[in-house]
Image (cartoon, rainbow, N blue to C red; front, side, top):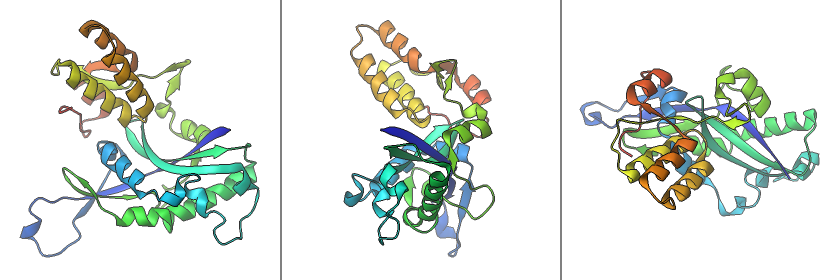
Amino acid sequence: MEIQKLYSPLYVSIEATDNMEDFDYVDWRDEISQQEAAYYYDEIHAAILGERMPEEAERGLMTYYNFFGDRDDSVNEKARSLFVDVEVHDNKLWGVATIELSQDLTPEELDTLRGYLSGQYSDGWGESVEQHEIQSGNGALYVSFWSSDKSFLIMTEDEFRQQFPSAQAVAGGQRRRPLCPMIGADGNVFNLIGMAANTLKRNGMADAAKEMSARVMSSGSYDQALAVMMEYVEPVSMDEARCAHGSDIHMDLDM
């Protein structure tokens, strides 16, 4: 089995709850950037998992590929499953479709799969996601995986890395450690574990977050726990983190 990922931009808006009673009904949704959307990774990720239906457990969105009996082709045979989620790369939130393949797709088959996924994003699965509000501490979020403007595209991992080289997750054979504003934060080990784990999850490294947490909890001392965390994240101060991420990025202080 092989795994292939297809990346696409996310389009997120927020409907703030503050002072809404002071206005007549108006659509007060504000679009937010992919960088700002990364702050809501946990809420959006949980909502997307909640969209999965029992019948999709084995094949994900490939369940519907040949739903009407008109697509019993090589793509249906090779693509065993297709599951959609979100990941953070380059401090931005992206839509990611993970496909389990029994064989490599030809260029023509890849184009066919992209077309199918685009249709699911615009009119099928994605339309359902877009219509469901996602609650956050700052208001209701609305997430779309598709747009009619020119910014929408579906990229292979190689295409994604070429177009957004700063989003490269692996460099020189070593995993890039995301920046975590641990310096100057509450030094309680549980607080630091939470900060490091959240940083990893927001950078599309949920498995690494679980692995790190397990290793920290089995470490024999505070110093060992810190050493383990620093294998996964790069500790920086809040000022350094803000310089690296941009002043408009929300940072995690209340882990």
